[in-house]
Picture 1 (cartoon, helix red, strand yellow):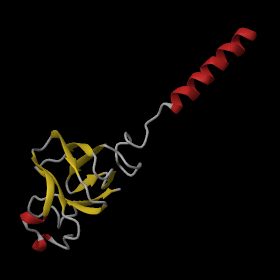
Picture 2 (cartoon, one colour; picture 1 turned 180 degrees about the vertical axis):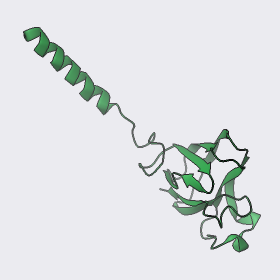
Picture 3 (cartoon, helix red, strand yellow; picture 1 turned 90 degrees about the horizontal axis):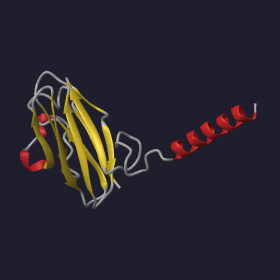
Length: 141
């Protein structure tokens, strides 16, 4: 009986230690789980999943962008204060940075740095995609 109790105690303690080793704020995937230097975005017709991310100001972050859709998609961050109401408002000079067109069933990883804190609009820059609902937000803290 003592051996069984000891084994159960070791297993329970191991679970607590492993649980404490979970992700910290700089490794949360950036999908609404806090500030992260590594985020993920999956595009499909016509949405991003997740549709909001939070990254640290002045630090490089990595985005893993996957296109699960059947047509190409982009992940474009619009300059602070230049939010678009519709595609009629779009101009290339409003883009702060972007993951350029990614073909269907493909993915890419890119790195960016944003110095100014704020909430930035994210869109798919492919014609008709923003008006179809492909938008999100990038919060920089």
